Image (cartoon, rainbow, N blue to C red):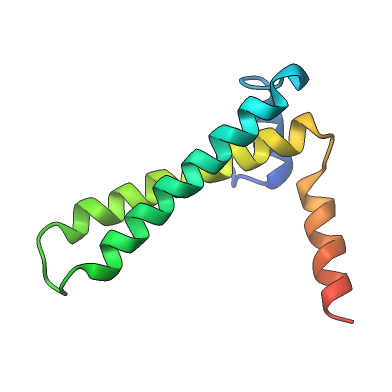
Length: 97
């Protein structure tokens, strides 16, 4: 059985692949591009009729685009020295007050 992925593990994994502070702007643009692609797929899904054969392909593409968005969000966190787990906890605790 595989170990669950935590934000900490994800940040470490991604930092081994993409972690060049000099490319912060490139990573941000890639993040925006991936968000745009996700938006397009969600729009297509919204316009589909239930039972349409193409819905499975769109669902698969939405999964992939979400993974891409997550990947570049993690890259951005890493190059900006942000611990996503700590930031998320701080943010949700703040909002719950």
